[in-house]
Image 1 (cartoon, rainbow, N blue to C red):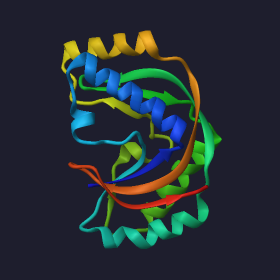
Image 2: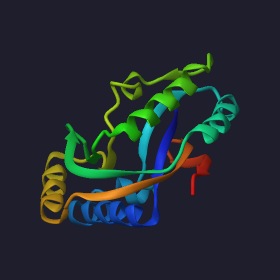
Image 3: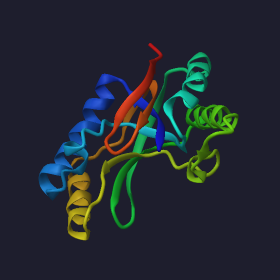
Image 4: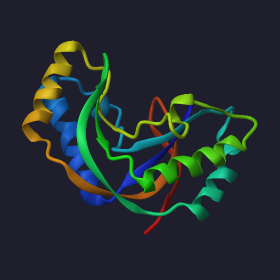
Length: 174
């Protein structure tokens, strides 16, 4: 499986990483830190037989994507195991989703996860994963005590293999 993900400017990354580390420290769940999962927002998840099938399409995306701002406004969960932070789905994020989907849709050798298609995609940044019920409770408490809405900026898009997270291709917009 491969993820096409958005990555953030240094300030946003630092803020998100702080939340990830606080949750790991207080809950005892170190999945995100042990696996060195960087703060990112997955735009598309695809099954492909190899990286080479995807790379020409990533190069095409490099020409049509751009950096922009977003507002992180809420914390939520995909029960029973995942805690995330979510931005407002603004025009920029919708266009990002549509452009990535259009590129992936052209590749006959891949299958896109339906939950990452436009109008089905829920933009989010995972802060805690594989959480038990008690760890989820603690993670929510951490975020209740420390989270305030903030503005961030997407500055790059990348292609990564998962388990473990390994960047394969990345383009920075600024």
